Length: 506
Image (cartoon, rainbow, N blue to C red):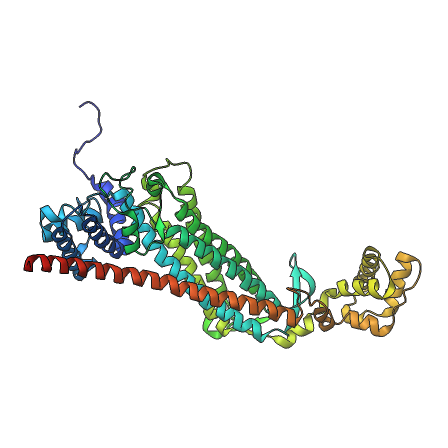
């Protein structure tokens, strides 16, 4: 052959083995070993129940799989020349069960449908683990929120003091996005927990294979009916990535807030000493680096999740490595990073303390009660809101120019502002004026659904706790479903073995 390219003619090329096969094999060992054994068991049972192979054949495969499980994943380290973990396990099954029996392991099945089934089984477990950690975080935030229903603090918009709020009201927002994130996670779980088995390579199988039975034996909710989509669909992958991204984005925004509030100049919260690192040169330093690590972990989760999404873009709608071996590492790394962050947040909130008195003092600073003063002018002086807004804005501008703060405002100054804007004074007394500037009065007035008033906030927290308890029950049921599937496989295997014993006795 002409040309200078070196041809070995032998699979695999050392570079391909080193950079593709070995890493993919090790990923499969880590993520897919047990799902693969479970899938082999369910497949053998279904083949026998459908009359495609004799019971003796299925039992031989089941015994071989049991031996492999007992040997453990470490017994199946990568060997150069072996394409993937499936072929390694299949070879071992044939060695244990014999070629005639073990050679039927892949009857009515392809690595295409099997690979997606294993990925779905592994991902659903990780979603369950993440969901369970989220429940714990939600409980920790809920506990802290209920402690601070009356803890006043300044609320911010555009990073500037806006209105008085409470720490509980802020955390009710956090709990809301955590609850919504949990619902998205459960929806991703439902999308993932669908069986592609029986699709074979692409078009299904010519054998009378019961797709729903094998799905039941593996704890899937249903089958992916379209055999094309079963081997070519990537929505379960992107749905999981989107769950990671949404939670990471929301948690990242909260992290930004917490870092600002941990500033010494702000002095709003105290990060527990167990999360604080010191300086090697500056003796006074208390560095809340846990929040920096959290911010970085969330960025990592976002990056890995975006890799999953991009990897699914502009590829063929069918069997392709882009959504098989190559996509599992970034997806699991994304889930790992987010789960680590969730666990850290839980511990952070469990140990967090607030500088309550300082926050209460600052709640009314920065003219945060100006909205209520304008509202009071509407209620008590009969102004339109826009006119009231202009009067109060003028008052604040005059105070800022004079170097005065909220506590130094006077009714006389308000009347001067009214004279400038309206041309006449306002029918407002000192008591009404002072009450309008009181942060406590401000929050108690805002008692509508979701409002900052303690009773309104408590109602939101109570509802969110009901959601959490419902999610707790749902997660337990999903766990139980997988355990029930394991029991079904064991019972089906026992029934099959008993039928052979009866036949032999006969």
